Amino acid sequence: MSWISVGNKPRAVVLGASAGGINALGFLFSELGEDFSLPILVTKHVGLNDDRGMLRVLARQSTLPIKVAKDKHRILPGTIYLAPAGYHMLVEEQGVVSLNLEAPVAHSRPSIDVLFQSAARVYGQELVAVVLTGANRDGADGIRTVKGFGGTTVVQCPETAEMGFMPKASLDTGCVDYLVTLEEIPAFLDQIGGA
Image 1 (cartoon, rainbow, N blue to C red):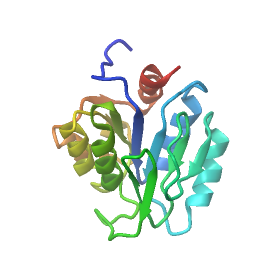
Image 2 (image 1 turned 120 degrees about the horizontal axis):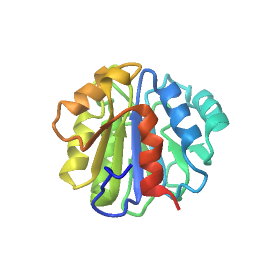
Image 3 (image 1 turned 90 degrees about the horizontal axis):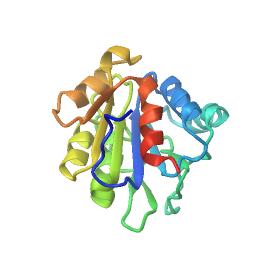
Image 4 (image 1 turned 30 degrees about the horizontal axis):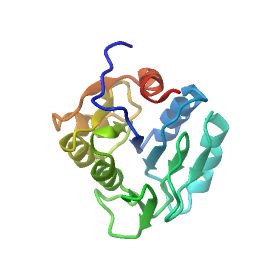
């Protein structure tokens, strides 16, 4: 896929998904190569206390280690971190995860915007942000922030998403570098994060 070009070698990927996200994430994680070297931080809107169920489903499909994020744990390469139910997940300067119980953003906690905005401030041009299927506008402000810090922004084609409203809201910001189908995203990520 020679059309892919990112400014600097990325250091991290952030993913946001809502309605329809389990299927999209399961497909994506099953298609990534085992040599994928970047950390992937995921905010998926989940019901209260539902993160363990999501972890079980996705772990069966993932070629990479996957875990529910814990406060102040160091972010490791080649590992997938899921935001726990009811907590915002942020990235801190020291390369660690931070969790908090601040007010919902875009009616959501965890919030995609919160993750994307904190990661943009830490990784700048070395961040790739991806918005997948969903039924609200969470992630749009985050995409705008990532682009403002020079990161690379990717959105699933709304027409191919299980729920197209969330990717369309991000697309409408005018800050999206790549509009791709779900099937194209694993190859994109492998190109930038494969060993």
